[in-house]
Length: 329
Image (cartoon, rainbow, N blue to C red; front, side, top):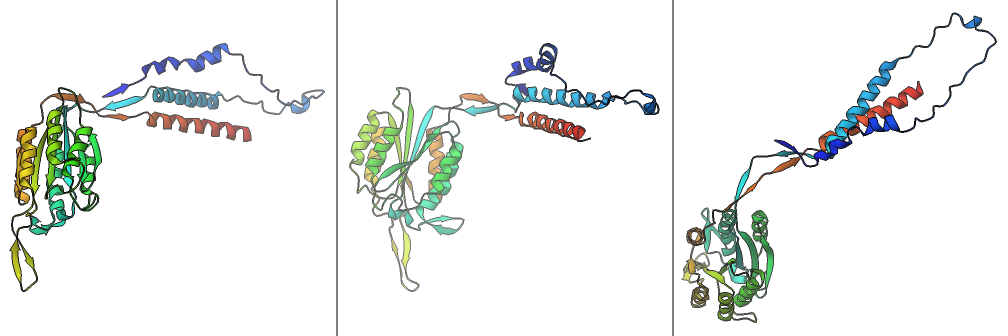
């Protein structure tokens, strides 16, 4: 449907008539005249004919332009169909490890070996898209944590910023405690706030000013629930073409600390050894932290005023051109 934001603009519609009726008339210049002693030499000349048609069409053009201008001033909008948006009031922060070990190619996507960060982006992107109603933020950390995306309902931007992340962007080591501390600062402190942190890492905390367990205690005091995910396969082949051996690429993963962080804050610890397990973990997180069913109705709208405004300007140009041509003739 079409609606008018400023319908009072139509009160200006009679303004041209009021100006014509009450303002003093502009003085008309006298046309040049030829004085002659008698009219007999001009008896055969045809009298000048008055053509009101041109003036009438010009008035119609000007009044039509004025009407279109009033319509544009009233700001017509086209309202689309109502859209229900779920709103949960939850703040959900993702903390992603970008340390050097995230380059390990022990995950597979579509049959191809990929590094851990690439697999994480693929799965986490789908998870973010499904969290309609949650404000989502993104923390990237290694030696130093930093906010890549503040808490926002713009999930497409969060996904894009996650996809732009690269290993080593924040250093080579891992500061899990500092990442949790930064999340605590960014999340809400109200009593009814629902704050969740999903922390993804493939190693042990070996950097930072705040220890992971101390950070977990602070998170528990602030009502922040932390779900930790340990990433990395437990076995992979390495070596040359002739000599290969199996190693554990996740030997540095500190599962004990990650479990303690989750238990302290009322969350859970998950282990992702491959892409399928990582997808299952996000499905479980959807069940543990479901999006609430409260709805807000939103109606998209499209501004229509440029169309009558453009038509009014076109009619004004035509009227000006008509006046110029009449003067030349």
